[in-house]
Length: 204
Length: 204
Length: 204
Image 1 (cartoon, rainbow over the protein chains, first blue to last red):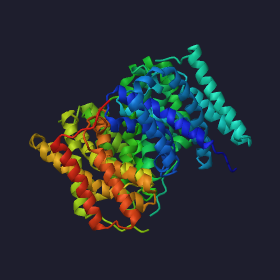
Image 2 (image 1 turned 45 degrees about the horizontal axis):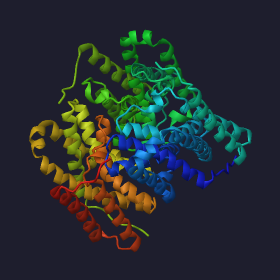
Image 3 (image 1 turned 135 degrees about the vertical axis):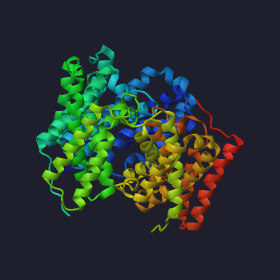
């Protein structure tokens, strides 16, 4: 089955920008130099998609070929470099915007897996990885255990459910712009609701 | 030369299960959350093969496409989640079973490299990496220097010798189920003997 | 446009050897075992090119298929194992030789990106990554935040400029052995000049 589904490019650009912010902030907190801030922003904004593309064989990954996406991630790093005290104070805003990036990345990533015939299981995995992979690379590069594995928040879980829902819709032939939009909104709503209500996972 | 050689699927599943245990245990020790425990088990059980598949261009890797292998690794994580105090007490048993996984992974990994025409040298390297790569990813994700690089144990050395032996057998036209089984048993025996006799590598 | 450009193999071998030294020294400082020293030397000498090859789809990467390159990186590790006190005392010499490796890797890496039709932007990125990627892997494997992101030195910046210059030369049809040599010398000169004059990047 052919999947023709493109996230609005403007939305994807926004997703990269907001995801990259957390990388830049992390770099500033670690006192990296200006090159480090830009690399961390770029890796966090684009890294999930790069892991996905390498795993499904879509090389070179869009994270190094698409000038708009690369420029967006770097611009996010520049914004952090100049305005990080202000942006860090808007932490709640960053978290909300990052939830938007998560919802979008999961749909884009899962759909790309399906388009490359990676199969249903692999598409769920790379869809989730598109959402969480940038943050994992950010944490590994700054010497931290990835937050997504330890902070008990419901971040990967909505991503996984959204990726699973996308694959099911595709399997039933119902995957379209409107249904994918609903899934993305569901991921975002679940993520924000869990933050608001303080839902957490058990830890070991 | 065509290589037709499949490890008994039941053995490969067992290998993934036992390799994944050490990832789950490491996650529990680091107090990761339940998602982190499952990811660490999955990465440790499947990560060596995923690195191999990405390096030889066999994408998407079996570690994200094969439902039985993925389910096995996750099941190992679930077992750790519920029974980790008991499993941690059986440390000696886990080490022995992990030696079995090592022997199996090296043969499977080296053979896959040969099947994908990676060449003899690359097949030795990816065969060894199939055996040790999951543990390396486990340690990087939990913020540790990889044990295999520092604990002086003879873990990578039997893997390397086993991978080399597999490539030599293939080169001579002697690679078959029975000879591969002998190599796997040799890797396991060497690993266990080194543990029993306390053989170690020099460190710097 | 066809790019026919081979760095003198003897130069590439020298580059791998000198890049690998810093990996071996880092392993010794962390008291890794002899296998760890060899792996760190190998990863540091060959890892930038391996990341490049995986990103542009040139699998299996030369870093695991080319016997001369692999042997060179391992030989560098052996040299560190036996002579590390002496080599560590020649720190200034190692830094200068490492600048040579940087200049060479950037040209080789950028050109390979162009040869694999990765596009201009991706070629700049993988060219830079060929130069700095080995050190990033070295630091991640030894539990450090990558030096290149935090030490304020002008290391990635000359690499980036050299990669950009190579792509521009190619775009204008001027990329040839003599022009590539000039770019490599420019990268090396800029790197050494920055060290000599103490030029640094701002940090956060």
